[in-house]
Image (tube, rainbow, N blue to C red):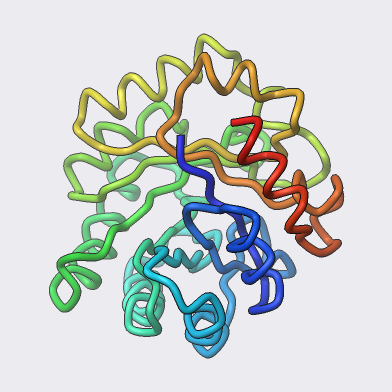
Amino acid sequence: MKLLISPINPEEAIAAHKGGADIIDVKNPKEGSLGANFPWVIRSVKEAINSEKPVSATIGDFNFKPGTASLAALGAATAGAHYIKVGLYDVQTEEQALEMLTNINKSVKDLHPEKKVVASGYSDYKRINSIDPMLLPAIGAKAGVDVVMVDTGIKDGRSTFEFMTEEELIAFTTAIRKQGLLSALAGTLKFDDLPMLRRIQPDIIGVRGMVCGGDRSSCIQAELVEKLRNEM
């Protein structure tokens, strides 16, 4: 499993990098679960870590606006992100999800074919009236994206494991692998979840609150990133 850590600024990015994160994921929690940060923050994070380590960027929790999302995705890629991550927050049908992801993927890869698009569904999809994440492996493969993940849409302290069982998450990651894509799992994960995560075996786990001392509004601590890396 690779470890993705989500800083909001260069200082947190340095802490995540020093602690041993594999992927530095720039986001803005003030704008939601996958809230977008500014292009200059993405650039400054890349400069701060001064590394070949890949930088990821979230572009938002999107309703059905394929044009807006495509422009945002291209902006993140141009600013320097290697992984461009979109949340299908208020996307409710398979047809909408396919149109969104196909156009986002095209907008990125027409100019940056080496970069990776990440499609995120939400484990708490029923309470946010969004698409079932179990539908996304097949949709993502058809759209040409590289990674399919699941996160929590509402950040109220409830974990992905409260909305999806271990068996469902194993089925989710298995379906993603069968499509030839990478799988990612996030959503208020805790240190106590590591045994379950080892059994599920996603390719990537994404965290913020866990390495902020349990409060995602606090700052990332390099020693907690190192602890997580060692325990993984």
